[in-house]
Length: 407
Image (cartoon, rainbow, N blue to C red):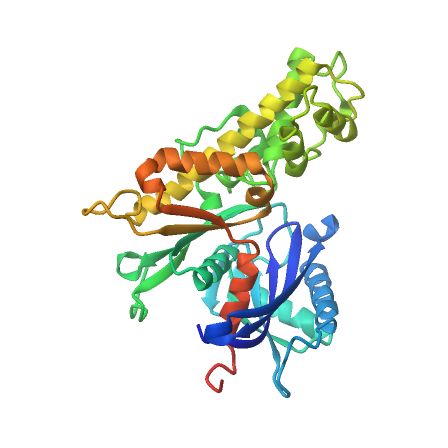
């Protein structure tokens, strides 16, 4: 808790990345000041080369460093240090190195799988003339858990619900079958679940899920993620609307050509349609016109579209809640203690889907209450940890700083 100084974080996890700087003030003052910038990744870089992607990221980071103001203090002769949040499956070999297992969430870049992503970023920073050391490589869920726990000691798990999805929780090290060697001093270990890759015959997969998976960049993988995360919900809605257009002439005799385009309906647009409260759903109709090129829709077609958004969002939210309930059950937090008391339990959630899609988040929270029961649910807090993974990465960089012993 005594970390202090200036630290940077880079959060790469989806179609955007964030660069963050944090001034830490030690035990009493905690986060004194923070600034961040969000940058969209051009789509061609998501399927280009490793060098192109990391050069683009390093150039943006270098620009951000140049705007460092008077409020941020880096002592003379000290090198800037960075926590690198990298939200893709990695085989982590040390606190500041790890090899990429596979890309997910629409990324498909040749030459990076099996490579150390910290080395890739470090080389790109050198090419930009940026003198910065990666002190910690962090998965976004682990970063959110670290940031959440720094602010609130009752945080036991972190969940990402954004472009993709994942979860991490704090486990007793002595019950981890994979663990070898000495137990950590605290007796606890963070588990990065990579739950997006969960698959089971119990998952209620429809023909739309199966066709989406078959035509995806990673067929057979990330099955749970493809049912609940922001990258895919809009695409599931598009596939259902396309079938209704073909089989039931939902949008008239001609199927709108744009409706045939993969991923043309993004989840933010689905959310905007779903939240339309006008009596004639005029905003939803405008979205259908702007995105799918349907000039005028009947009121019935708009209500059917709204119902499809409702079904897909509700299913995703309920499945996500079931995942959170599974973690709480594993930790024994799903029932009252013997003396009927219940310690406060906090789940930190980060990600644009949870933050901005209000009907999704409301349904998730209501489902979790249903699963836990009113009594237990009253002591379980689900809270938005906005940019928790970035702050967490900066904290982990601080706690593993090359200057930590000298400080």
